[in-house]
Image (cartoon, rainbow, N blue to C red; front, side, top):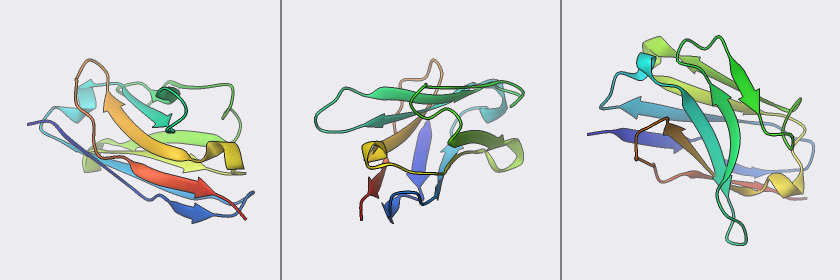
Amino acid sequence: QVQLVESGGGLVQPGGSLRLSCAASGFTFSRYTMRWYRQTPEKEREWVAYISSTGGSTMYADSVKGRFTISRDIAKNTVYLEMNSLKPEDTATYYCNAAGLNAWGQGTQVIVSS
């Protein structure tokens, strides 16, 4: 079955960096666009970044543009989210998703705090 396993979250100071990973299995990873989302208890799930099936096209939410970079390694069935210049408002649980597949992992928590 479809599995998505996010990792790489943690506690980081404002201005710091983290690299999130999402290991995918149970589907043909190279055929699917992938997205990162984030959610806090106070807000609905928010789309963060998108990458096309080939990796040739990416898009970002305005709130993270210029600070976050999404990438994928098709050989490893993994999608990444490089997060730089982190702000307290980036604090959330981050999830990855394959477009069209109703499957979610457990998420990885990011806390940006001094």
